[in-house]
Image (cartoon, rainbow, N blue to C red; front, top):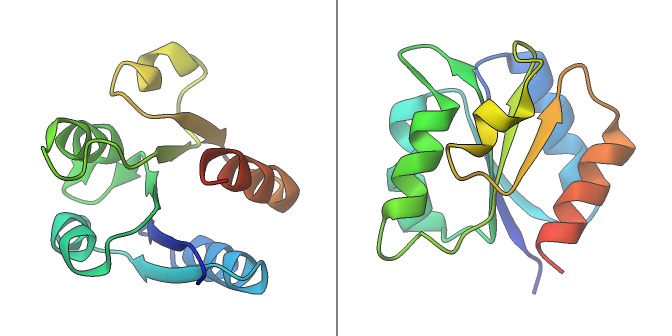
Length: 119
């Protein structure tokens, strides 16, 4: 059974590339560009990993990460945050994420970080 990954990014091009790359790597991937769908999708899809864009329309990925990490059922799900805006990773780690990927990113780095978190 393949591992499930949920991806949030409001940039359609990035969402497609990440979706295709992780699907090629044999992961079961669900993607959304709507931050309001993340928690309901976690409930429905039960992902093994969540990848969040930091800057998303209406909110930020850090706040969504915090919501996931304090949730009694979801708190153990690893979260990666994508960011093109921060040079200080410590700021993102304060949200409780398990790893950070700076944009632009290398697809090999993405796959390595995903595999490290959901062995």
